[in-house]
Image 1 (cartoon, rainbow, N blue to C red):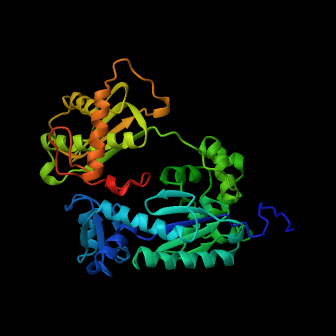
Image 2 (cartoon, rainbow, N blue to C red):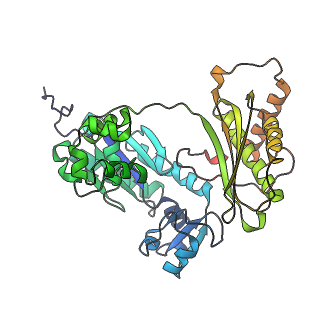
Image 3 (cartoon, rainbow, N blue to C red):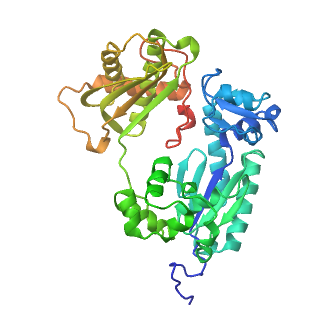
Length: 411
């Protein structure tokens, strides 16, 4: 019988997780689908205007310093030959399902972390560095065969998901990094604390204020110190994860769902924006029903052009899934909207209740429920936007949120 080691493994290497991160995913999808874009600097944009920013950039564009969030006007100055490509969310979802299929020919996927990241739990036969190298090579081969040669990935292996994610970021593109517990912390001491997922600008500033500015100082800090920095148990949890413990992910109840849209220049008026907001709300309501929730609150948010700031308002109501009721509530809010020039609009359905916990109301109208479900079935069969309540803009394909990967039919 193999001896049990301090890291909890029986094989002595303690590798339990594989994290797969697609490289420059949106741009790579465009280059895979359109060979004319291959080898060229491209930026994915929500609209063809200099006032928006890049959603993603190809590695050729990244070589000029262009990255996610770079303003288009600035990006064009950095790279005069930059090609702007409008976002095609349905394409990215299509390739998402293809690379998922490729991975699952090699290993089951434990969690889909986002549209371009997945985590896989290694079984006992896969928990050595040699086995991980063999498995990773196989995944990359299947990725090329099923998704395409331009869909590459970087893979990380470690004792838990946090460290495996960190490892996947350490060699890009098309890399493989294995962080054995026996080689820690030496293998990561050249990194900065904010290279770790979850340490953003604010937390990095708090760490710095607490005297932690290097990875070595972060590693040496005890759990009590990190608990004070984080202001709670999450600091102690982070300490355990950093030191290799494989903790289960905390479960968080779903609290809201919604959609946002950056308006094109020709729709930046409250009159034209309303038809788009209605469509966003109808999409959110459809998602609400497909994921078996009811909502108690509708939030409307508008960002104005220039430096005019934001408009945010909300309305509360009984639990419902009824699209028509949501649209009526939206019109109540819209009457309060000032006549300014909107840049971005968004709606959120909040205070969600699962269908299993729904409290039926004496005045619920079964016919409304039957109508909304009938519309859902028609749109699912003939395509989203086929039928809708009242006037609607041309159908808006989904923005790809990293916390929710839509079905192909939803895009």
